[in-house]
Image (cartoon, rainbow, N blue to C red; front, top):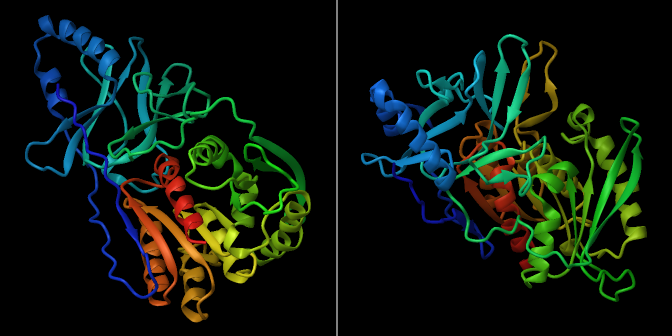
Length: 429
């Protein structure tokens, strides 16, 4: 069995000066259902020798880890992936899920196949050799109907990093970046997170605001701190793991000490507040931002105020900055949902996708805002709308940077691109 090792490489197009530039987008290479060399070998072993081969396989898996990735000798930009799950009990249906996949028919039904009478379940595909995604297994007891969700216990790359939790996912990363800022490196810092409870008036929902304060934070410091406001606090505490990122970047001198404000959103109300909601925008600017500025030593200069988020959060950040460039001079959008209209569906229940926010950038004069955007090559309408927005920003001579990663709508790539985007925006003050 051969493991494939991909040399770290990052697709980053930097716009270093004003003016329109040539934009070269990456080729989109989808995954395909396939039978890997490993699976072909195991299927064809006679039953007298099969168990010895399986025992050998599990021994290697403890050392090499899983899933299995093998070189494709015919296509240098593809590799074979084999997901493996171990279970010796009967009456089990086992499948896997990939977070952020909404319409990926090429993965099929995602059911795992049992290898004869062994304890090995498998599913193999041919995938782009720079793919990164998060996954976990779904184990169903066919007698009781109970479903158990499990990470890949032979894969130490987890989201969140470190110890397994009930909301953990495993990560397959064939395109590791040079620096892992997401993992905690320092344990003796005095950075902290404050929590403020806040009730918004739009949906009358109590929510928490989490404020990251850098090491040696001084509320009376003469020079106020740069600040980033982010939606979806859970993501930036448990997926992108912003406290670790900021601790690492600040301690190693990559960015100056700064404050981060994480706005808690919840599944039932998130789709009301974040997608181009003028009422929420007004409350955010008239109540939420002043609340932070009254209690923390944050800069009042737009070039030191960043707003960002993922998915709907990236859309909301761009929306709020667009109408308030005198407050927010920087936007960090991760897989922003720029395809959205103000209303999600029409009177017949059809989903409306008309790039409402992008159209505002087309119609209005250029705003004094810098952007960092990222999105995945497998993200369908997110991919298309972000590429469209980037073209408009280029035509309008905005200052921006972006990353296209090969993955879906999930955090396994966002946690890698976030520190790059943050460093870019802070360097361009």
